[in-house]
Length: 582
Image 1 (spheres, helix red, strand yellow):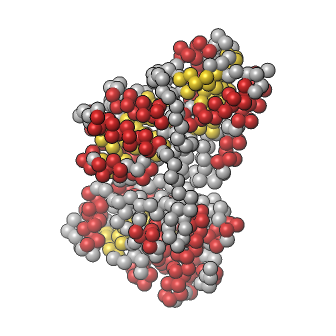
Image 2 (image 1 turned 120 degrees about the vertical axis):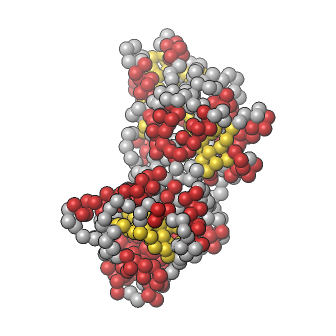
């Protein structure tokens, strides 16, 4: 892989001496190295391929880090990182893990925030612009927002504040006609009108908010972007630069299937096919089977709602069969919850499909609109696991958050049979919202002889030690039980099921013939289920051990390292139990 132009680039200053043909060649080289790496490691493909030219143009015309750029989500910042001294993380496989997939201030003075969620850039940039002014500093401040991020309420709040400023602020709307999947909502209808009219449509969201507006039809043309940036550099008021780009530019599979290549696992570069396709059964199959049963056989008035992540649950399958009952509200987690609340208040049984790494963005709606109003909305939650790709996508805080909202019941499924039973129960109770933690460690199956959300399920009866395996960690509890049996210790195993309310009757019964209760949860210990158990036994002789994740933002540690640290391996657990029992 030859990169003669890129080899000469070590900082943005090196771009300023290059002529247009050299910059164009640089764009080709960068696309080559981007694809070469992400095909091996996985990553955000389409978003990064679409912004190569505008990123090169920015760093050619502007003077980073005096001129500052905030990347919304920052999943499209790979070219930015390559041009700001971090190219070895794309050129040398030994350094592939040196940088994160998002902007990171600890990596470079050209990055300002750890950002991995949408809709934040404009609000952040308005604050930076005010700070620049009050401290009598110079430089441009730019926010780059796209991939559906404008649909988040914070983006509109940022635009509203931006319109009140009277100094330099550039808002680059990277409009590729997509979110993670396709765009949804009236806002994107307006963007489409602006694209089709070359920015001249009478209706203009940005002008209506009092902002200056300019349109660039071809954001993948370097000469065009260089001119556009020259024209607005050092502008003395806020301006929206609406730039039309192509998501996946330069790679046919990413253009043909934009949703799949928003983020993709490692793939065969020549074909775009996944290197290790997952053809196994998934819990999504159970979810969809339950949806169809509820709707077609039981006539439950369900709807399915997602906030721009239909692929996580294969929800378009449901949408194709029942389009009038399927809603994608865009990247707007708050809207998804309040939208569901409105439906439930009027007699529907909405199910909102979320990732636990994004759901905290709707905390107020979960508490205020659902909890206080006791509305029977069902929320499916995936991603509850101990892993670390970056600090912004953490799957360990959902139990602490959801199980402590008054009126909301948080359930943890352990098998596909239990998942189906929990969904059915949630859709037919009327006491309030119910969230269900979907396991993430492969599909497990077991006969469901009894189901009572108020009681822990006894998996194995024993004495002395009781192992409480929450959701995905029930198999680990069963493994530990088998290993303890080899030491002539017959431990009990329970699946807690309900993470919001303790099964006090069963916990009290354990006092008679158990000395030690061990909780295992794939979540933060602080505020988690184990702490509730420890508190319950606080004034008794029962000894309690809690195992789970530390309360922190992990960053690029391996899952194996994190599980070892949490002592969530069978060998470590057996050793800890033996040490605390004898």
